Image (tube, rainbow, N blue to C red; front, side, top):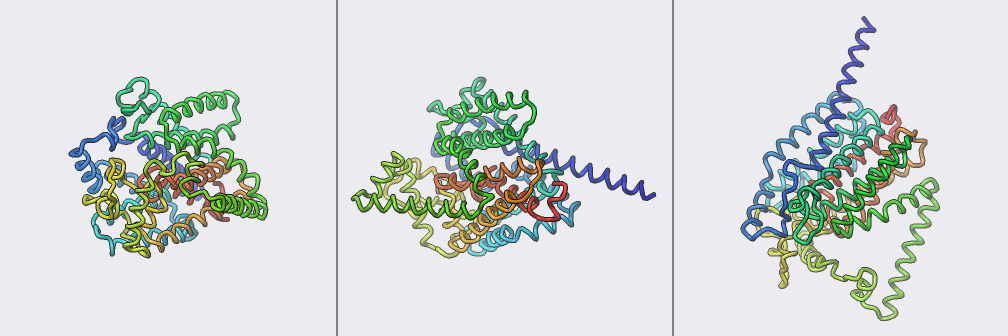
Length: 444
């Protein structure tokens, strides 16, 4: 009788694992390919009438996408319920993230568009539930990364096929690759993310034939990335592997790591001071370093956002209450005399930190930085621990994701946005908690 009961429990556990694996794989394909691939028209290419319609649709939400997201949330809530003890431990060890989400919920109280803020907070809560369900239900960290590897491989193959078979839909008016997406920057960051995932798989693959295939695919992914002409994504795809190599070299010796960071910060400050003493202006310094002191027009956009921040610097305007709310956009509300098409059609501050400061205020930004700090702390603990080979691919990807996300949000916005980088950041946070928790890391 006892043997029969154990067999039943083992069978139920196997079914839950299969459900988690299939759910995560389908979720990744959904996030990468979407429900309407190759839309063939970016926001910048729309007429004024089409632009108004699209922004109204964004503010009210896409019903089909909401249904799909609810479906994934219900499944992952079930996975959390079936692993109740581990889930309680996981959430208990993730207090900074829960505090951040709680603050976002409370911000509905002072939002000028509480209905929009409520819907976006629900979406945030659903994202956390899905990430937790995947992290707690997936049987191993190796399996988790393997799913990322397979899903991004399928997505990138579809992107490349689209460029050749559907050039009118997979390229924009300037000939830049957009693939499955509405804009070259979206295609760029998916290609960048896929390259990072496949580089990790290359590092830990043991079969020679598989490594050769991965190298060939990586060449194709990188050529597609170059075709998007997404400067931020191209730069990060090139720089991230070297930063990761440096991080792994010093992470096991934290005192050397921190000394290097302090030395680097001192060198940067000394260099800037030398420029100013020599009579260089900030514009001249930026021109010398980047070639474009306006960051392709972002300086005016950031100036407008700073005006929005001044309205409520401590609490912000409320979560999700600044862009695409169905009313006037920040450019028209906090305006500038110069209103280019780039400014009027912007749907973010093109700076994740500024967007957080404007919507959640200094208090929200502080909570977010605490969340990032605990992510880094868990990452350092995991790197310094004796993580077995099973967990190393996921651990390396968690490092990659941090290296990508922090600089990416200087010129783009992915934090708190309904995109794959934000979802994966939360998922990797839970994965790191599992890898560093004495109870949760068993057999993971």
